[in-house]
Image (tube, rainbow, N blue to C red; front, side, top):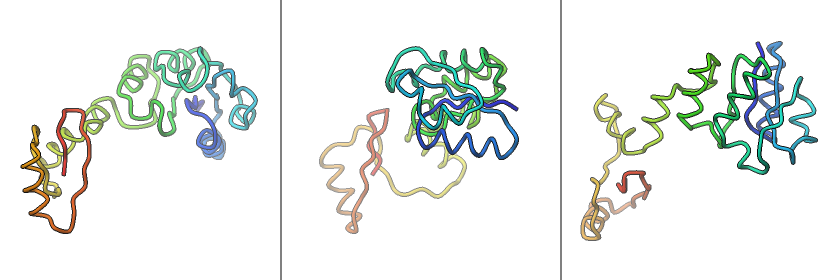
Length: 163
């Protein structure tokens, strides 16, 4: 197995070492500025991504191209960057490359807090009380009054504040 590591720094080193312990080969996908880092030097192979800085790690098409160009059978995104991006999972699937992580549908579902919560409720998973979309200041005051030990505010992509 050959796995392309689509991340940098300590997480890339950890992925490389875990893969190596399994007897797998690793490819460090990297931007120019990271060419001499431990993560790249320790990998069995290196592939320079286009662009520089963090932006170079955020292009799912470039990551899949790197996997195909190096013969990697899998892409491990680490965490951050593209690890929760459904586009990378889709592009990997379309290219016949294993995405080390959830499939694109799961990433889309759980990438939106409101959708994830609604899904949990449909499945009967216990969830904390929350507010509906379109929360007014008065609604927030009433909700806070009903929960005197405090509340947690979380933003949502659908302008829905989960309290």
